[in-house]
Image (tube, rainbow, N blue to C red; front, side, top):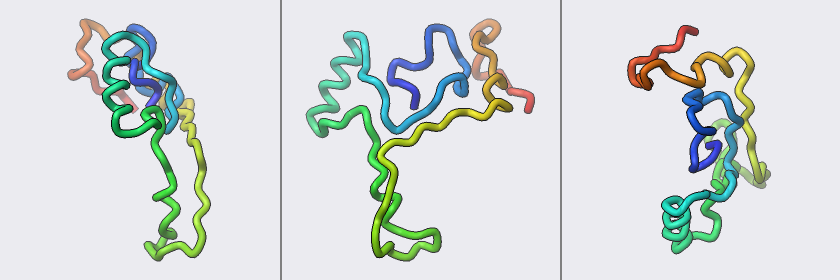
Length: 100
């Protein structure tokens, strides 16, 4: 995810931003309230843990020791970064089919 606030204003391109399991704090009254609600369950509302990915090896066997990354950042490859336009005509994102 890039942010709970979404991409910058008017940017429909999902691949225009890096994606990560750690995101910035929400901004705005509604998202602040939503963040407060989530925080009643966990103090780490802006992060997704990765430790469970290390519990098993590639064959599904329990791992004897676990090593896992704290944070991942996915940078979209140049071949897909501009597949979706930042502004869609008539706001019709449901009818848009990118040409790969």
